[in-house]
Length: 168
Image (tube, rainbow, N blue to C red; front, side, top):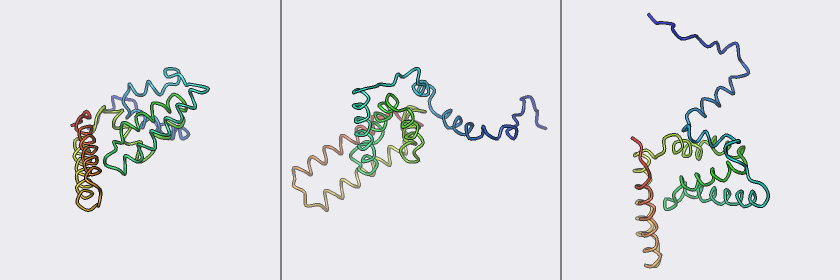
């Protein structure tokens, strides 16, 4: 037999709040310290020339983050975190849109909620880097200097992935 020690919430009596409840559930999954930064009173928005500079930096880091999804040598998460940092200070609405993105938002939410990267994601990232770099080295007519540079950059990328805080 089930005990009803907790009061039951009647969701049917509040039909217009269902959309807000969904957004609130999604925000509750984000790390509490990050939620504090979403409060506009906590993080002052910038204006004037500084706002233009911050928007340009956000756009630049966003492009690098998107490229990092496709290119295994470029890390995605640090660039998206920087994008979010600058968007919170210039346009919280754009930052919220970034967090809701099905592809890029998940990376940010996992990082902000848990403060790290799952081991399976690290293994997948390192495997992709090794496969793509090996295929490039074997199949491309690059000069030896460019191949050495590619191996160096791939090595740096792998070290960055390994050093990211891990989750169990």
